Image 1 (cartoon, rainbow, N blue to C red):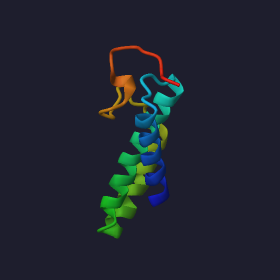
Image 2: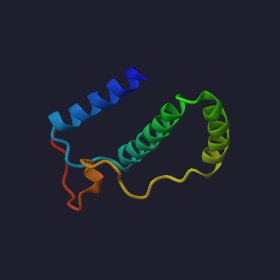
Image 3: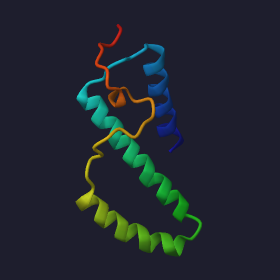
Image 4: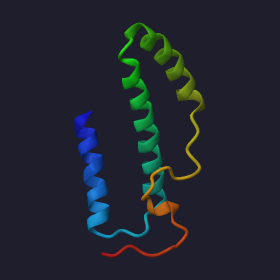
Length: 92
């Protein structure tokens, strides 16, 4: 899990370092997937305090979320370029 967090931070640093102002729709979609995944990991970690409860809740939740999890419609990352109304090209 620490490796995943390190990779997410590396991507954020690279986007800032290279002053990326626009991203592809695929990159934006991937960011939404990562955000949704991070929320689920956070929920799972919170359940670790009570493993008996965690097993019951995670089993029900996993079955529901696999079937009915929609893609987020709006960007939930505060600095995500897709949340900006302006359209510019990225610097290379």
